[in-house]
Amino acid sequence: SSARPERQSALGAAGLRPQGSRGEWAGARRYKALLRLAATPSRVARWLRAVCRHVVPAHLVGSVRNWRVFSRNLYHLLTRPPAQQAAAAGAILVSGLRTSECGWLQQAHASRAEAVKSPILHQRQQEALRLLLQWLGRKFLLPLTQRMFHVALVPALPAAAAPSVCYWPRGVYLRMRRLATRRVRRTLLHRLDPPVAADLLASPERALGYCELRLLPKPGGSFRTICDLSRAPRRAEAFGQAEPVNAQLKPAFELLTAMRKAYPQLLGASCLGLDEVHARWRQFVCERRRVASSARLRFVTTDLANCYDTIVQSQLWAALNAALEVRGEHPSICKRIDLHKPHDRCAEFVTRYLSKPCNRDDYPLGIKLFERLAHERSAALYVDKQRTSALTIEQALSVLRQHIFCNISRVDGQFYVHSSGVPQGSILSALLCCVHYGALDLAVLVRYLVRLKSGHVAPRQLCALLRLIDDSLMVTCENEVYSSYVCSMEGGFDAHGAHINTAKTRKFMDSAQEGVVPGAVDAPYLKMAEAGAASIATAHSSEPSATDGFGREYFAWC
Image (cartoon, rainbow, N blue to C red; front, side, top):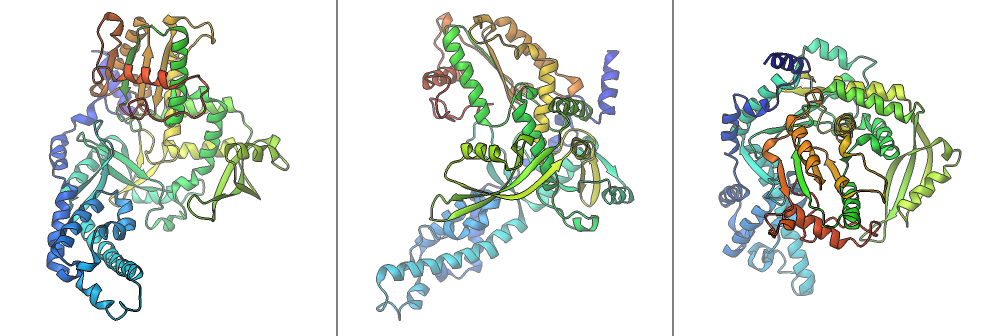
C-alpha cells in the first residue's frame, strides 16, 4: 500500500495513468452507447435510394429491375473503404444495369442505330450510362452521405475478415468526438498557449511542423488516436511548413531502417511484417521437428494495451540512444535513384523514385549498391541521378528528440504537445515501438531469447518468442518457462509503460500426449504448428507461404 502512491506519482509525472484507467473513464458508458448508433451500409443505401427516387428522374435509371440493381450497387459502393468510393463510383453503380431498359439511351442513339454495329452501339450506351452514374455518385450521392454522416473504417473484430465501414450521424459523431477529445486532453496531451505554440513552430531550431489529430473509433467501445502526419494541415504555410511531417522524418526513417537491418538483435523479439514473423516461425518449426518432435508445447498470446500511447518517452529515448551508439557516429548517406520497371498489365514502363542508403565502400561509383539492388529486383532499369543526402547523428537525434518529446498536434483549433507515448500515424512509430520493446526484451525477457548453438539445443530449452508490434506469441515445451513468462507479462512493466490486455490473453497446452485429441476449435495453435511443419520441407525452402494449412494467415488470431 505504501508503494501505491509512489507508483501513481511516477505515472503522473510521466503523463500516464495506471493500467486500465483508459477503459474506466467517466464518459465510457455514454461513448459506447453512442458508438452503437452507427448506421450500417445497407441502411444508408436504402436512405440514398429513397432520396434518388425523389430527386433523380425515374427514366434515367429505367425499369423497375434497373432500380433494384441500382439499390444493390449503392450498398456495394458504401461497403468500400471511404478512400476508394469516389474512384469506384462509376464502375460499381453501372454494374448489372441494362441499357435496353433506359428509354433515353434508345432515343439518343436511334438515329445512329443503323449506321453503327450493335456491339459498338452497346458499348457507347454503356459508357454514357456509366458517365452519368459516375457524376451522380461523385457529385451528389457521396457528398450528401459525407454531409449527413461521418464515415470511418473501423478495425475488424477478431472473428471478422476485414475492417468494416460504419456511418455515424453527424450529431452523434460530434458528441462521440467531444467525449473522446476530453479524455485525450486529460491523459495524453498538454495544452500550449497560442503565443507559445506560434513561437515554437516559428523557431529556427524547429525542424518539424504540426499535424491534425484524428480519433478513430474501435469496436470495443474505445478509440485510437491517429496523428495525420502524412498530410500538411491547413494554414500550415503560415508557420513555414511546406511539407507534411512524415516527409520531414524520411531521412531519420532511412537511418533507423538501415540500423535495423545491420543490427536486428537490437529489436529483441520484435518483427516488422508477416515475412519476418513467418521466417522465425519456420525456423522454430523445423528446429522442433529435428530435436523435439514429440515435446509437449505450450502457447501464450498476449496483447499490449494501448502500446503506442503508454510508452514512457524517457525510456524510449534511452533505448534509442543506446541503439545509435551501437551503430556508430558515421553519417547516413542516401543516394537518389530512378527505378524504371515494366508495367504488369501493359507494354509501358513505370517510374519510381528511390532513396537508398549506401555505405562509404560504395563510392565513388556505387557499383556495390547497384549489385544489391539488382539482386533484389531483376528486369528493371536503375538510373543514378548523382544526388546524395547526408544525415549526421546529431541531426538525427535533434529530429528524433522533437518527434518524441515535442510532437505538436492541433485539436479544435488549439495546439497541444504529446506528453506520453509516440504519435500513431508516423512513419517512425512502428520502428520506435520495436526499439522500445526490444530494450524491454533485452533487459527483462532476455532469458526467453537466449538460445544454445544449433545442434546443441536440448528439448527443455526449445522456445520461441515473437512480437508483431503489440501482439506477442510465446511457444515453449518447458512448464517452468511457460509459468514464469505468464507471471512476468501479467505483472506488467511499469518502468516501460507496458501492460497486457488481460481480456485478449490466450493460453493453450498441447494435450495430445495425454490421450486427448484436440479439435479444430479447441487447439488452433497446435493445428497451426503441425500444418506449418508439414508444409515446410526444410528450413531454407524457396518462398515462404503467408497462410497455414487451413487457409488462415499466420498470426491473424493475435
